[in-house]
Length: 65
Image (cartoon, rainbow, N blue to C red):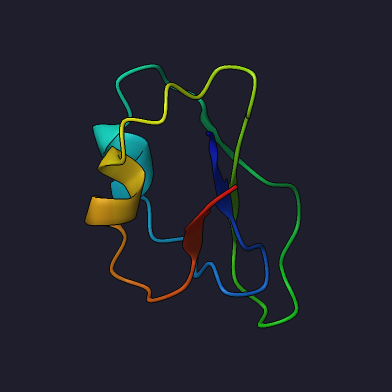
């Protein structure tokens, strides 16, 4: 099971990127509907380690797929 980052909830805070052991979290292009940067998970590379979910300070931004 991979994790997903909800684009319009993500606030571009990069804690998830810093803890990902396989570097599968990438910066999205442009801004989301809140006007902030955002990140996404490359599902094929995700090892479902849960690190991004634990590190994210924004409730509901990272969810199990």
